[in-house]
Length: 96
Image 1 (cartoon, helix red, strand yellow):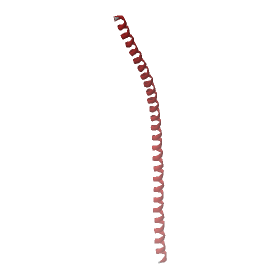
Image 2 (cartoon, rainbow, N blue to C red):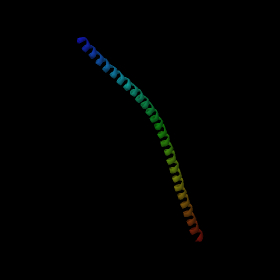
Image 3 (spheres, helix red, strand yellow):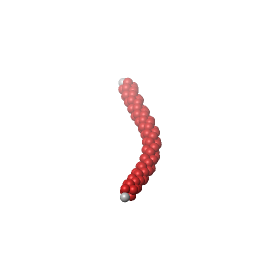
Image 4 (cartoon, one colour):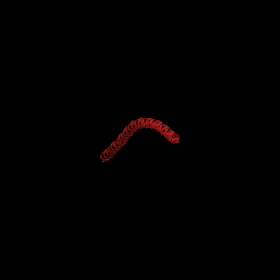
């Protein structure tokens, strides 16, 4: 009787060990999948960082062009004003 009882305990223990090994295998597969996902995420994150830096430079260039154009128009306004003032002064002095 004791041999049968021990044998049953050994078989139960072996079943539990087998189930634990199956779970460990499942976890190993999931860890591999997670590692792949993390690697892919990091690669995508690096590419996004590169694209963002390019966009930032492009935005800065566009803003610089706008400032240059705005300064050009302001300077053109000053020149136009000076020409108008000079014309007015010339008209005043020539009409005297």
